[in-house]
Image: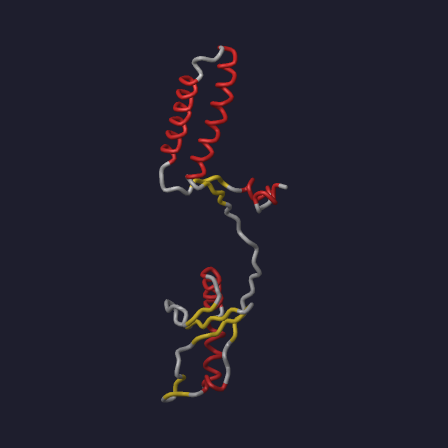
Length: 172
């Protein structure tokens, strides 16, 4: 029933933190709630002066609680309540490093390859081209996250000599 009413299971709400997204500060909300309670108490007290004392106190208390609760609820809703949940989603970490040895890479311009030394990385529908010179940004990236690109650069540094040897062998 909880999930039907609030869209998410109760476990999500228990992990989250209640926040107010409204642009006004919280103290204004608290001040307005207290002011509404005081205003309702004053109105009820002034309108029920002619009733019997037993009925007046009991009815006035119930009416005040209901009006106060409704005003507080409306004010809180105006401050746009939300629940924030910070949770990491498990992901499949697949990194594939491919040395491009296609014939198009063998086309030379004045005895050198047309492009500086680079590698192509493909995996899980994502692709990137990274230069082997350190400090240069990737030539292009389609789908890899920043942390994945950092891990790829670490692997390039670890295997830099093997990649350089394969590149030289291909173009010599």
